[in-house]
Image 1 (cartoon, helix red, strand yellow):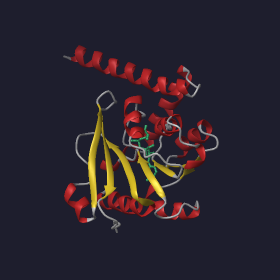
Image 2 (cartoon, helix red, strand yellow):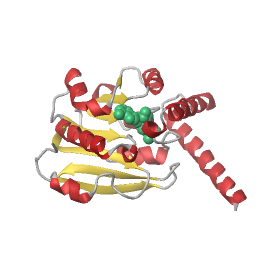
Image 3 (cartoon, protein in one colour):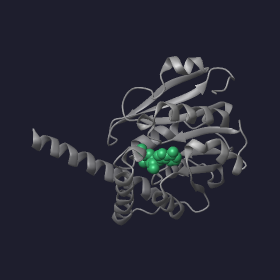
Length: 230
Ligand SMILES: C[S@@+](CC[C@H](N)C(=O)[O-])C[C@H]1O[C@@H](n2cnc3c(N)ncnc32)[C@H](O)[C@@H]1O
């Protein structure tokens, strides 16, 4: 039993390393050293704030692909929350988004430094998603102007009030047809259907990254009508 578990863990780790490095190769920066640097940065951040970081390793390629597949075609601004080491940032750039379109928030200073180093020309801020409205104003991103918010935040480990506050600010920022794209570990939406309906929002589960470590579901939240969440 233990042997089987160990082999499965190693296989997952191997897959994750390969899929992560495959992602980096596309941007011509793949070395085992980069992979280890990103992993070490992530682990250090997790050790200093396990609940905030809410994962022990960066997301893999399969999950990044599912997240990016949900992006609308747009030349407008896209906001990323909780970027970590930049797995989704990189996937969005590979998908053809312009560097000037992205506004990327990451709370952990060490991971933010890595993002700055990896993505010159992208607006990466060491900032708190809980202050999204204030940050958007400072960055001259108008309310109602954003076509997608892509989030890697560990919502499930946040208190309900914080989760709600983030949802409210995200939907103030999003355009009427804008999308909030969020992954979670597990099959259920981080916001219950009944709550979403009360705020005029809908949710779709659009994919499951079974190869991710740990496996993760991708959800897309959108307005059913033009009512904002308050
Ligand atoms: C589950 S990790 C995901 C990282 C990355 N998106 C990925 O998929 O590999 C969550 C990330 O959100 C960041 N984070 C947590 N709370 C945050 C907040 N309030 N504002 C901005 N970033 C936050 C953490 O530091 C961490 O990098």
